Amino acid sequence: MSLKPIVIGIAGGSGSGKTSVTNEICKRFSKDSILVIEQDDYYKDQSDKTFEERLLTNYDHPDAFDNDLLITQLKQLLNYESILKPSYDYKRHTRSEKVTEVAPKDVIIVEGILIFHNEQLRNLMDIKIFVDTDADVRIIRRISRDINERGRTLDSVIDQYLNFVRPMHLQFIEPSKYNADIIIPEGGENYVAIDMVATKIKQYIEQVKKS
Image 1 (cartoon, rainbow, N blue to C red):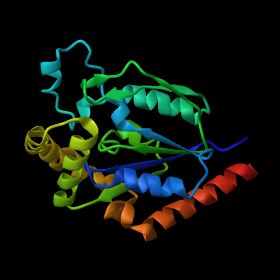
Image 2: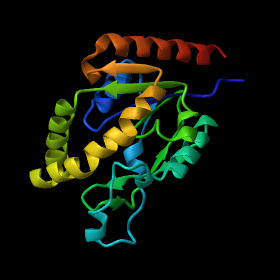
Image 3: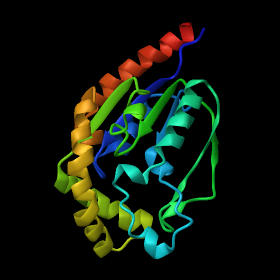
Image 4: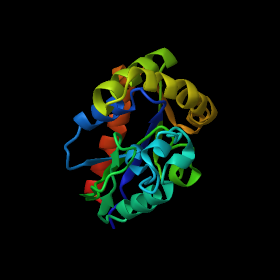
């Protein structure tokens, strides 16, 4: 009997470098071996709300995510079943109508700010990595990303950071790092830590092929 896929959780504050770490890990393997699931795709559907109401949503609170769906689909992937993964429309602030059929792979990376806060989700992970980056670096990265990629204004980004992002980081995200197995300072530039994780993954993939 073949082994189940290995699940690697990569958490950290907004702008910490989670995606950079994920990309650096993925570079070391073929696309056939690794699947990346982003928690951001599992924001709850808000099509029943007006656009103005959606703007008031606290997207950095655990309740903003449809973790039940994420857990269900992750379990399906662990059983080597394909899923229909949702996606999120950041300009409309609600779930997109687009879904993507995703096939299971031997290594599954789950990335998101609050993936370690949910115990059920946490218990599905074999390796938990927290990317720890200074707050000033994170806010600069967030401003750049939200303006250039998500069509936000500078004022709206700063307002959201002060009213939601920072308080939620201190209340939920920062404490969740104590659930991590590995803490990587400075994100994707910490090649020593990334190489260590990649070596562990490589060993697992070789074990899967032999089974």
